[in-house]
Image (cartoon, rainbow, N blue to C red; front, side):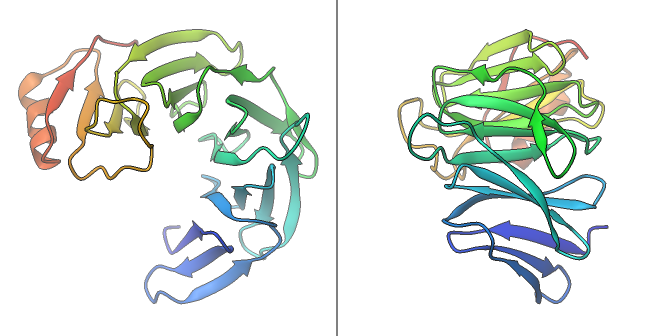
Length: 231
């Protein structure tokens, strides 16, 4: 409903009142620093993820612990960098330090992987769902973006940016994909760089250059138009 926001930090996850800035609740169940906190689009659940290889799911109204999932590991812990709900709130995608993206479904109490893990040669720097929950776009620290079909795992498109992509976002109807990236072309550098001097790149089916240039101007960033992707 836009009235609250959830944040993650080294110590905990907090739910805030947007208008007053008052902390409404503190989640303390996660051991270790948290890396991600996200609200389900239907507003009913919150997922928190962090260094302990776990994603925990909470009731967004009562803050009751509902259940969780653990990243498979052969030894040691596997930090979970991203946890992202599908737009229909039925699935949860995770990206973890073992360089894999996993899709989870089933019951809230006992979610399970619905497809084999998608393994990559690098770690994930950004992750997002398409508006229809059918695709996931994933950016890696090697500068590559891959778009996959969730049901089949098929790679639909691969985009080599040669820069570190730190943010991905679909347009509301899914026909366009925008990404924000570090201005440093060295793809081996840290993914925690500031975007103040970065680039905004938009992939479109039928680019209208004047409109795209105005968007880039608003962001005070250079513009690159790449090949079209299907709507």
